[in-house]
View 1 (cartoon, one colour):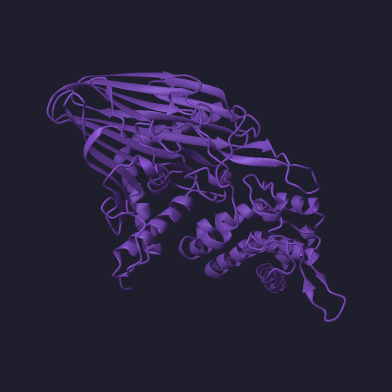
View 2 (cartoon, rainbow, N blue to C red; view 1 turned 120 degrees about the vertical axis):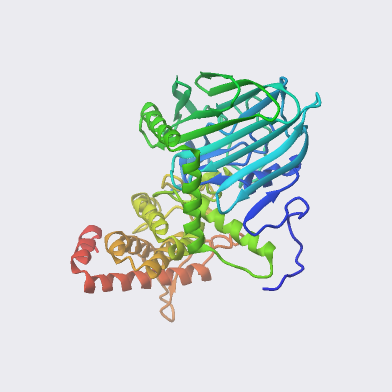
Length: 553
């Protein structure tokens, strides 16, 4: 492909083009919302926004777990039958990214510090986000500061952060404060209030109540653990950390834990040329109802394994996983390095969004932000599953099994709307419809056909007839039943099937009759379901008989 003259959206003096990395050469506090997303690290279950380790300077602090959410009653101007009743919002879980540095008791604050040689990089081949700079303190001392952040694509519940400090010219007392902070209920480490976020519907909802109810905290041999239960949803989570400190000079560590925070302080008299290196292993576990104390024990085991295996092994595992991923997924563009970088950044995001979802969905912002409440939409089936079907079929299968697990809720939603079969929610986390606006939510019935199309894409690529017989056919039958019941044949004139009162992908034209996209997709869903059931009867009569019994088909 030839280079073109389309304006580049990233200033290249600040973001130089690199086909395998995203590089930032200048820190700018004016667009933190952008860079926190661009440099975020995640694995599909756990995600960390690219907030600076120092903590205070941020557009939106964020650490998220796939599916971990709070519920709240939806207030309609006027209640009506079939309206969604319960909202769901992803929760900002305790933040382990905080690692504060003090030299001569002076804090490093990135937005006001004098720095040289600043560079931040996210490497698509290693899955590591790293940062390096020289800090010139107000007292005239030069300090080299390096940090790195990795959310494991191999180990679902693990992340690793490293922080290195080197005094370049003169000795100085150095204090490093590594923390774990509940930001959902305490906005920041100074308990500042939340600024008004405006009325952008893409933004996550704020809560009028305490969300994370402290249920457990423990410190033992430097290991810190916190556990919580969500006030309304009842979901539970635990998180914790352990440190490995490398320093040739004697140092002192202190750890303290409370219900909303944990803090480990490393104090050392640093000599010129000596590097203080701290490796922080972090673990998160969540559940629908497992007691937080038990989840904390799981965190402890995950941390013990990580410490035993060591940083080098975690880095090697990450690089190996990505090597295999790029072998399956890379797209090479010759002659346009900017396009090459953009394509690989997007492919890397697909890996970070899906690698360790297990059998959960992929939210609108995956686990890198709280936008759209952390809800799952049809984007997964239309945009992501087709790619994964041909490159990571096991991951695609898990996403389809997620929809299969959701069938009971989809059937109930169809009953609420006086329909047969199953109606998948337009937006959800727990399987219930969470869209408060019918016209641009529930009325988008085409979500059913998106699920059916994704299933076909997966089956076309994988040939997984076992999944089709056991679970996939059930999805197809129940989604097709909804269309057969929703639509009708006109009785005046030619016999034509119509579907009225729906909203297509163009959400600006809502609740219309015979939306072209919806009709075409419904026809596909019906024909494909019928063809699959007929084929199943021929090549697997036992599975067909079981399907007939199970669905009263």
